[in-house]
Length: 200
Image (cartoon, rainbow, N blue to C red; front, side, top):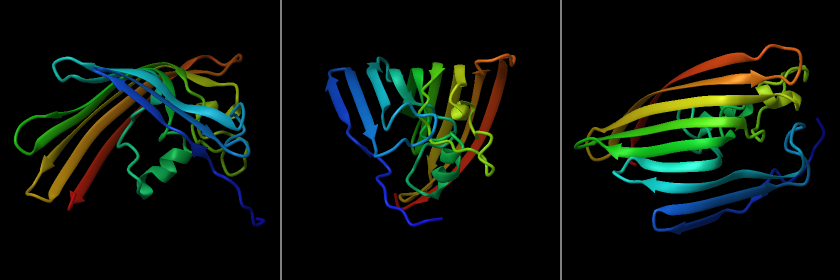
């Protein structure tokens, strides 16, 4: 490969809140298309209205926001491979209820329930090594995911002042729309996660 220098992407984040309501807008831009199926070198990563649901049930978002299959992006090596498969930092269009609830001394439960009507079409999925087949449904530029359900439950137990362990389960089910003669198929995914945290 030849040496190259480019702007991967830059972004702005606008976050407004008024009482129990909020609005979030995050546009991204770069000097060329991030992936061939992107419409341009400017795109909206997330845009949604939010409402803090009464009785501490969580935050309900409506708009374009990240799907949460498995442990969310944490800034470590963990997210890189799923990101290039279109599984992490994958925003879709619909509704998302997210929360972290206290369930006793040292125990908290992070959960989310999501329904997406359409694919956001701006994830980081690549093609395979031969550059012939996309790793994700949208990689060919015409297909998309529809009617996607995503659920996740991940309890965290603190074992002392600095040690915590998290175990989680999540699942996703969606329809694939290939915009052609192929039949619409339903895809199901599952995820098991574990994390050990010390000193945080």
